[in-house]
Each structure stands twice: as structure tokens, then as C-alpha cells.
Image (cartoon, rainbow, N blue to C red; front, top):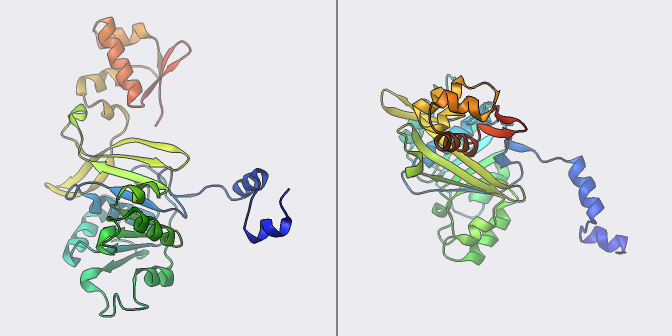
Length: 300
């Protein structure tokens, strides 16, 4: 049995202590099932994919208390530190995003810092990133991109770990990094263009990730919200739309909430193997599951 004094001094917990602490303070999310509170996360993807508009959309949704890609959020202040986009580009992104989100304008709880408009004292002692976040104390801080402020973070794993340990005091979401940077994060989200398995002009981005302890974040397909050809933001593709096949979508819509294989084959009008492939496809995209006496649709 550990000495109680030493236990307190070093903040040691027994399994029972840990369980009681977790039950008294359940895990909370900024974006439900995506971004936990008090966590460090990373979003990775090639340049030019549209990560900044996606992150600005997340920031606006959290600041306004609106769902992000159908995920509930906890409304709080968001500090967005932009080292890449110009002031005009940021204003254009936010103005475009406000409309599909049903906002007249971006919320005042979205706090914007831009390297093109920063204080002349920026970078001097007492006027750096950590002091800024410490003073403002936002519910979420987004640094875009990470290596613009810490140029050597991608060079050495040890340096990446040291910086991330300091970041844990400020709980923020970042973009880019090396293996140690990725592995040291609580949340990892990857953004990419759709592969050949998702051949559909509607799909603009594919989002997939991993949460520490809780495991993989399933693939999410995103469609771009446009206005006369100009991209405004993103929406989540759900339901039968994930089949990326109008004929199969129509068949799925005809099927009742619970059905048997013969009902599906009759509705699909094809052979047993083709019907099996169709049903497995529905299961793989998460809109159908096997039941005791056949199949049942999944309510999303």
C-alpha cells in the first residue's frame, strides 16, 4: 500500500481512484464524438484540399452553438490563429460560411488573429503564442498551420513532443506534423480527396480519424456547399446517399425498416449474389445491419 503522503505529493491514483474521478467528471466534447474538451488534436491533409474552410466552419459552429457536420457542439469561444490566409480571404471564407449555417454574420465568440495584421511586438518576449492563448483563454484554439509558428516541429520527434506537452496547458487543435507529433495527440483527423471506391461528383472530401482510447472515427464523406459555383462550406453525406448510386438509393428507400433477404431481392430485381453485394454495401456504409430475422435499417 502506497504511503498517503507520497500518493498526494505525486498525484498517484489507484484503479479505484481513477474510476471514481472519471465517473465524477465524465468525458465532455466540444464537437460530439470528434473533439473532446481539454485535448490536443491534429488535422492533416495535403495543401489546397480545403482544410482551412473546414476548420473555419468548425470554429463558427462551436462559437455559435450550431451542429458541425451533424455533430452536436458545446458552445464556447474559439480563437483562430491564421498564419496562412490573408485578411480578405478569411473574410470571404466566413461570409460564405455564414449563409449555409443560417447566420447573418460570424458569431462574436469567434476570435480572429492573423499574422498579416498582428501587433508589431509579436514574437518578442511576452508577446508570443503561449502568452496570447494564456491571456485570452478560449474554449478552443486553432493554429493554422502549426509549422508556421514552430518551424522545427517537423524536424525532430523530441521537439514535437516537448511542444505538444506545452500545448496541453491550452487544449488546442492544430494542423500538420511528423510521427511523434501525430502519436502524441489525443485526436487525429485526416482530410483527403475521395478515392476511386467513392466515385461520385458530390463527394468533395473524405474525413477519417482516430481518438485516443476510443479508437477509430469512421469515414465521413463531405459534399461542398456551393453558391453559383463558389464553394461556401461542407455538409455531411448521410443515409442512402452513401451508396453513391441513384438506382440503389431508390431500392433502399422502398425497403421497409425491417425486411428479409427475399424482400430485398424482389425490390432489387437481381440475382442472389448481386442482392448480397448490395446488402453488404449498405452494411459497410452503416445504413443497414443484420437482425435476428433478416435486416433492419440503421437510424442515423
